[in-house]
Amino acid sequence: MSTKPKPTGPGPDGSESAPRRSDLLRGLTAAFALALRACPGALATRVATVVVAGAAPIAASWLLKYVVDGLTSGDFRVADLTWAAAGIGLLTVALAAGAAVSSYADGRIRRATGTRAQSELLEAVNRLSGLSRLEQPAFHDRLQLAIQSAQGAERLVGAALQGAQGLLTMTGFLGSLLLISPVLTLIVVAAAVPALFAQLANSRHRADLFWRTSNLARRQIFYRGLLTDSQAAKEIRLYGLGPYFARRLREDLDGINGQEERLDRRLVRHESALAVLGAAVSTGALVWGVHQAATHALSAGDVSLLVAALAGVQTSLISLVGCIAQSHQTALLFDHFLYVTQVTDDLPAPVAPVAVPALRRGIELRDVWFRYTDDGPWILRGLDLTIPYGTSLAVVGLNGAGKSTLVKLLCRLYDPQRGSISWDGTDLRVLSAEELRRRISVVFQDPMEYDLTAGENIGLGDLDALHDQERLRAAATDADIHTALARLPQGYDTMLSRMFFPDDTEESATGVQLSGGQWQRLALARALMRSGRDLMILDEPGTGLDAVAERHVHDRLTTLRQGATSILVSHRMGTARAADLIVVIADGTVQERGSHEELMALDGAYAELFTTQAEGYEETVR
Figure 1 (spheres, rainbow, N blue to C red):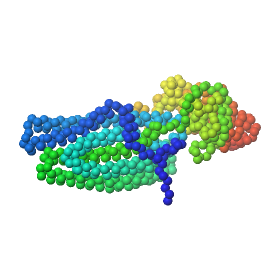
Figure 2 (cartoon, rainbow, N blue to C red):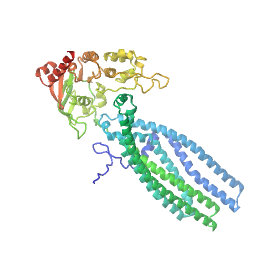
Figure 3 (cartoon, rainbow, N blue to C red):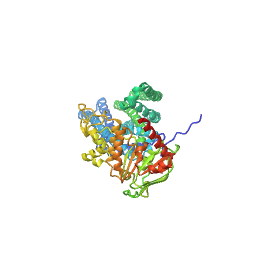
Figure 4 (tube, one colour):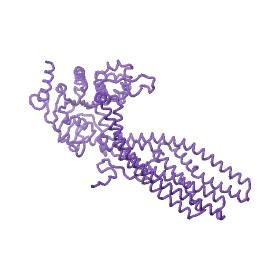
């Protein structure tokens, strides 16, 4: 059986792959930079507590040695021993206070870095101008792991600081051991090396496990969402799909648990062997110390220091190795956060973007080829189309002909692989995508249903007018939804959701759900908030509307589109016939173009579609 080499990062085309063996220092640097941006004061406080907690045990052990040697030798001053004992007490108080301050600082770092990391992550995703990356499953795996690692950024900082504290304590105690016995010190250090390498290897395996199971984890979230979603509940109840999806959820969970079980068994074997090795070294060192004290080679204070140093080194080593392993594992996962926050835009931004002018001449598509993936089928195949300024264009064709893809290209949610799309003669690629979209109003075939108030659902079409009640009502009236919204319990302030309470309190009334047709009209009202833009695109605006409502909305849209540049995508010939220009798309190209009368006279694809649909209506009437 042949095996493929494991990929080590994004390919030259930006495609996703397995996580890279990110350098620990790179992850730590990025995490500390994040914490420094989020809460510099809390980070400085936490560093101070590390110094106190790391140095205090060493100082206390030396003070204890001084007290024991003084008491056993009989040559001491009470005042000196009293000050030494008081010093031990003060160090104990400092450790207790430092622990409380450390806990408080950790909380601040956790909250601040979590908020900052989430914000930076979402800002990075929002910077993606197009849709291609968001439609890649591997990128969603990266994104899911990035969200998890963003929430755990504080753990990486905390583990590093805890490791620094352990390193400080261990260094001090090793120095103390070195004064007692260089050979013993060498043995203790040598025993720690296998533990370090074993924990680093385990951390890599753990990070790889997260990557291998990320798709399963994301899929179980999908199944869980289906089983608890009120919209999906209708079909799930009707078709009895609950047990089926629950079984698939359990299969994915079993897959994840099985891989974790195998890794946990590996960890148990390693950690048991390392614990036995550590215990053997400590026992041997203690026995040696007792024999040395019996022959007066070591003093009683030396023995007490030896015991404290052995315990301190072992504890610090365990802490340090654990922190290094956790930091290494977390840094590997944090690489996903770094990848997403540094990901390049899927739509290349022009080096010197040209200002988007008001449309005056029209839009032209020349020899446009497009497909969604490099190995997928071509959706558009050399499409040529001119949309003159002030023209109402209707685009018709069978399902899958490429009508909605054409809409996405005009909004520059994608760039064509070949050919060009120009706005008044300027290629869209040299225009700012954000500025271009400000000049476009769109109703998509599958509009969003926001869990917000009715007024907000409309006002999102133009955030500058979000609270302009007059414009909200005018857009709703044009979309034939004003009367329905005015009758809601709180009118335009009614929450259109069963998920959230209007004022975030359980005492308030639940929201209201609209029908499918009402949601479609609400989306149309949202688009009409931009009715004064240069280009209006309506992708199946009649979806979900009854015949009377569709006719009313169509008549209103016909009035609004007069003299404006607009594109209507529809499979209903009756709504398309009033357009100035009609194009028929088939097999990714424009097959026919002309007015309704011209296309009917041509007796081609359009005439067949129109006649077939008209005959269906006539048979219904009969």
